[in-house]
Amino acid sequence: MKNQIKVLLLIEQCNPAWQSVPLEGYKYFQEISKLVDVTLVTHDRNKEYLKFDNTEIVCIEEMHLFKAYYSLVEGLVYKHKVNWPLYNSLTYPIYAEFNHKVYHKFKSKILNGDYDIVHAITPMIPRYPYKIVKACHSTPFLLGPVNGGITFPPGFREKAREEFAYLNFLRAIGRFLIPGYRETYKKADRILAGSTYTLNLLKRLFNLPDSRISLFFENGIDSNFVLTQKPPKQDSKVHLLFVGRLVPYKCADIVIKSLSRLNQTIQNKIDLTIVGDGSEKVLLEKLVQKLGLNDIVQFIGWVPQSQTLDYYRQADIFCFPSIREFGGAVVLEAMANGLPCIVANYGGIGEYVTEETGFKIEPISPEYLTQELTHKIQILVEDDQLRESMSVKSIERARQFTWERKAIELVKIYEQMISEKRSLDK
Image (cartoon, rainbow, N blue to C red; front, side, top):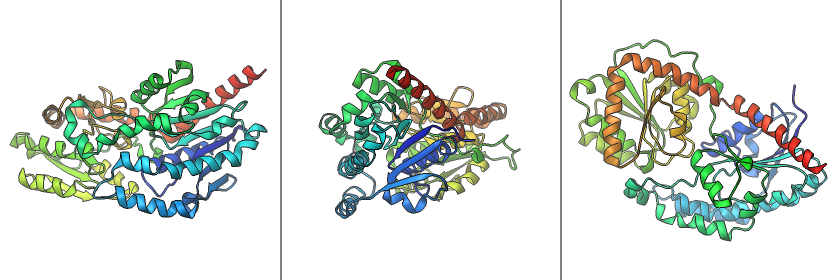
C-alpha cells in the first residue's frame, strides 16, 4: 500500500532507453512511484518511453530553436570523443528553459500546498540551479543525489588533457554567473551528495552544516542483477572483465599493460574480456597486438545493459582502474554478480569496494597503478580461497544498493523532512 505523501519529482533526464544519468533518473522514479504519490516532471524528449498507469507525468516541451541548437552543439563536441566540459557549458541554455518553465508551471501549486515535498534528482552534476526552490517556503525541497566536480589525480595530467580538463575552469565561472545557482544550495532544506568527494566540495563551497547535507550514494542496482551465490566454475581459466566506455580516464589501457607484466605461468591461466566501445578502441586493439596479448584479450564492443549480465556471470575478477568515476555503476553490477573488484581508490568507486570485496589502489601515477594492478591480479588468480571469499562478500555488499532499498531510504527522508518543516511552521 502506498504512502500518501505527495511528491513533486523533478527528473529532467529520465529515460529507460538511455544509459548513465537518464537511466538512473528513471530507476529512481520507477521505485519511488511504487511507494508514494508521485507527479513526475521531465523533458518532453523522454515522453514516449514513460508509460505508467496511475502516475501523473508532466513533460516540458522544448522550443524548436533549442532543438536546432542542440544539434549544433552535438556537432561541436562529439568529434571522436565527447568534450564534456564544453558540452555541459553549451547545453546549459537548454536546461535553463526547462528550469524556467517548471517554475512557472508549478509555482502556484507549491505555494497552495498541493505537494508535501519537492525532490529534484537530475541533472546530477552539482552545477545546475533549480528555480522552483523560490516557491518552497512551506514545502521542503530535497536536492540530490548530486555527484561530480571531481578533479583528475595529479599524476594523470596526460589523461586529463585528453579529456579536455583544461576547460574545467568553466565550472567555477558558472558558480558565479548562472542565475539561482548559489540560491539553490543555500535554500535547499536538505542536499544528498552521491560521494564523499562531492559532499566535502559542497560543504566547502556553501558552508553547509551537517544537518543540511548527507551522503547518499548515487548508483543503485536492479534486484535481478544480484546473485544468491556465484555458481561453481565450469573451467580452469580465471576470467577477467572490464566493462565501460573506452575513453582515456577509464584506463582500459592500464588493464592491458598490467596483463603484459604478469609472468607466463599466470598469463596461461587467464583471459580478459573488454565490453564497451569508444574513442580509444582502435588504440587499445593496437596495444594488445603490440604486447602480444591477442590470445588473452577479447573485445566485445558495446552491448545493451541487459546483455552485460551474461559477461558478469561468466567472469571471476573485475578490473576497473578508472581515475575519475563519479558513480561507477559497473562496479556495483560486478559485485552483485560475485566478482572481486580491483579499482582505483578515487571518486565513487573507491567507496563501494571494501577490503573484504576487493582491492583499492591509490592512483599515484599511471606506472604505480599499472604495477599494483598487476600485483593484485596475480594475488587473486593464485588464491582461489581469497577469490571465493571476496565473491561472497561482494554479493552481500551489493544487496545494500538495490533500487528498492534506496527508494525506501528516500521515503524515510521525505517523512523526516516533512515533519521537521511542519514543526518549524507551527
